[in-house]
Image 1 (cartoon, helix red, strand yellow):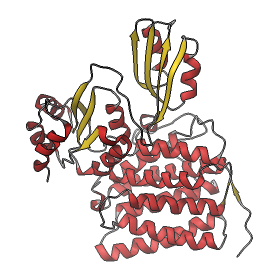
Image 2 (image 1 turned 120 degrees about the vertical axis):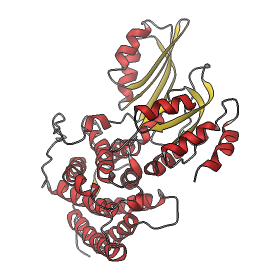
Image 3 (image 1 turned 180 degrees about the vertical axis):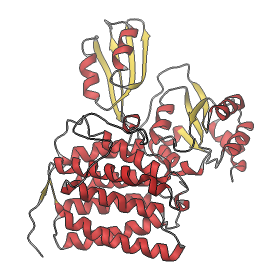
Image 4 (image 1 turned 180 degrees about the horizontal axis):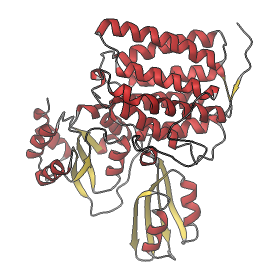
Length: 423
């Protein structure tokens, strides 16, 4: 075994994430041209991976954390909520595993990074509920195997990643021989590792995003700022409030979203989503006496509370491809509409934000797309029994299911009645 005392710092980690985003920027259109049937992201997998990676990269722009563990956690949370399409969910779980492997660390050794990547592969595999092994997982297992032996040999991180890439490429070519094409998901795994390696070496140039300055975008590339995720749900009560509701809303909308401010006599209840909860509390201490302060990380399972007593018992959240379909869904009985469509698959966070609108106490989700199977599975994992997923594969199935929806019935009764229409 070689003697390797290499230390990976938070600055190295930032470059690694920047390099990965840069590589997806360069390759996402090529990925869109590959066969993505194994993940049902056909024609969009490159865009889904890019935008999920964009959410992870954007989280580090203003991050104050110095340790590699906290930065990995912030990246993971943003990737989980920013995940788009089935492929984006798989990618987000890789970052979840990285975060687990680096938890509590200020700096990390090469072997820590290598082991953390192996955690990521494990979480990615677990994110796919069926037993069928898809090409992206086959390639990921090859990557994990290559990394394992390199970690055992105590090699530097660049050599660990290089060994992982070599092993992954062998599996990619094997799946090509088996299926007759290069799988987009498997190729996406190689893009991720290549970008991470270039980032650690400092050998990358991003054509549209610099993490050390403000965002810069081209006309052709999805803008990363629209994928910025605010993973913390902050709620509190201000007793004997000294400020007007309008002023509170105006202040909070600059540093958060999903802002709800309700006046109850001399008290004011506040709810919003943010990426910097400490900043919110600093703002609020001058408004009155703070009580019932609650901070939930929406990227982890949590019990989301309903703020208003006027909330409906049950509502439908439906995905619509365009304005015309959105109107049809509303007329058919959908309470909340999330607009989807080619290249604009809604993220996990879009669904979580819809639930946190507190329009209703429980929801049935109609994803109306095979591209969103893992996305809504992720939403269910985060929100528990407050939501039910009907797994409608297309818009027409969603409309047919809505015909059987009865507002006065319970969530379980509606799901039982509507389920036979889902094939």
